Length: 75
Image 1 (tube, rainbow, N blue to C red):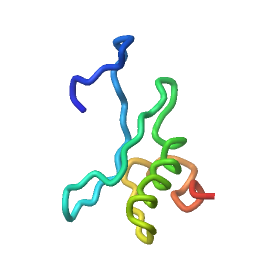
Image 2 (cartoon, rainbow, N blue to C red):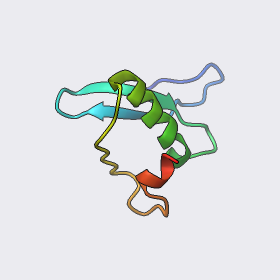
Image 3 (cartoon, rainbow, N blue to C red):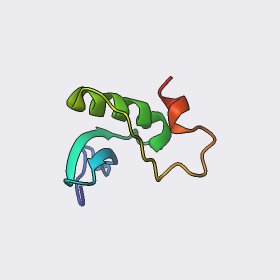
């Protein structure tokens, strides 16, 4: 969310699961200040799965250079 800040003034960093066919955000989690998206990916998928009941298709566009693949992050 543009311009959003935590009470101590730090910017909020969010990772979202988006249904691109509807534009609806299925799940959203806050990224820790000293982290990146990779450790937050599995909790995000778990949250999206709770909303949908199940997940069968994953499309990850922000991890092409990472060593871990999405299937590995679910374990």
